[in-house]
Amino acid sequence: MKYLFLITLLLFATPAWAYLDPGTGSMLLQVILGGIAAIGVALKLFWHKIRIALGFSKKADPDDEQDEEAS
Image (tube, rainbow, N blue to C red; front, side, top):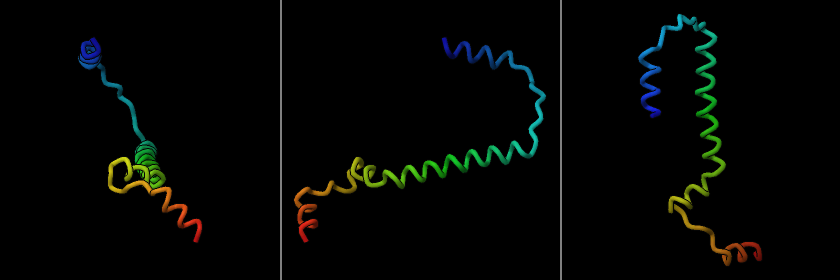
């Protein structure tokens, strides 16, 4: 049903004759670069948890943490 609606919209679409000024292009570029930066920051914040989830590093043992605190 969704696809039929989508096909109908695409078949009866009319040109918008819209004007996109150069400011629109730079705004789109900022949105794309901002999204890439946000993904990078999120990966940086959760990198250790991601590595544990993928199995590339193992969780620190509680005994090792106690030994480090004692010394």
